[in-house]
Length: 247
Image (cartoon, rainbow, N blue to C red; front, side):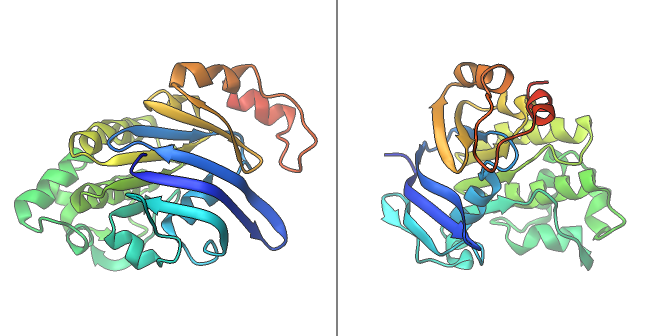
């Protein structure tokens, strides 16, 4: 059994079933990807694992180290070592980058803070800036990445890490995957991008709230490019979306 086990997970929001009897095992120390078209339920899966408000009324179970965490709140799951990097990182007016990183850091020394900010692709000068609108989306993602590196989490959920950022910023995120792996963290990347998928070691193909397939990146890549066929589900991607996913 992996570090994280999802068993027969179902979630209905506002009368719509988003997750449908979904099961998966996440292996410790590996980089996983959950891929699939828009509307597949990928981000909902991440929010449910994290235990965000509105995503707690589930059927099935979520287990960490073989112990159920389905009744634990967001803060308790964070203390267990699970963390989520948002698709759109938050802004905190007036909060210095240095203090943001130190807030949840295992090692709060100046040396450690300098180390993670540089690993995220920023200079030490950024530590005196504020986590607000003066930072670009890519810069805020790097700051968030630095804070997660400083946490040394057991399980990292990356929701659409390529969303709204430039190629250089995305390369820094891919570099950080190696830092997470070296530190023993388990990574789950939520994505509909083949570029992101290529940086995983193991992948799950998700559609309509279900896991359709799992395996190596190589084995699942054809589903992105060739095998997404029309279906009658409400979340059916349009032909344009299918073409976009395959590029």
